[in-house]
Length: 154
View 1 (cartoon, rainbow, N blue to C red):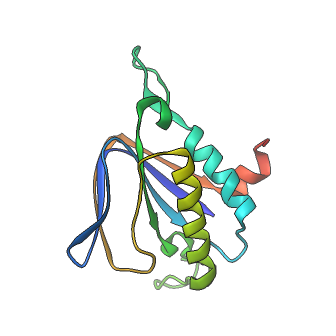
View 2 (view 1 turned 30 degrees about the vertical axis):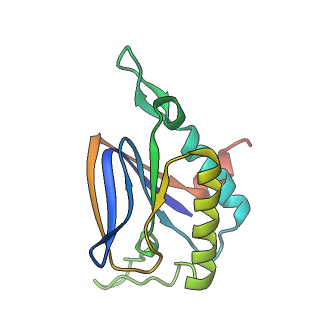
């Protein structure tokens, strides 16, 4: 599983001209799911995501979490995070999770995040989404379950 997290001042997702999700201060998170991913892996990734302290405190130090600043989440499924570009110029997506399984896990992630963060918005799985954001920093972090689950003590 891969999360690309962008600290934002605001972000929104639009599908067919209609806004499906919109947040102010918080994280825009692009979520890539592989066939190897499970709910247990998702739980560990969510714990790390929500615990990240990347907002500035009163002294200008990045020391505050999403909950500390009352931030929101905009969660966007993005199978292209599993693009394999080793050969040629056309990416292969063979490592991305199959749609039915990936969508179920994406919805699981949304539900778990909503239990922790009151403002949790989303895109539409598999849709042609238009994402708008004002990146704050810019500040972008990549979480990969191969690294997080192998080293993180839960």
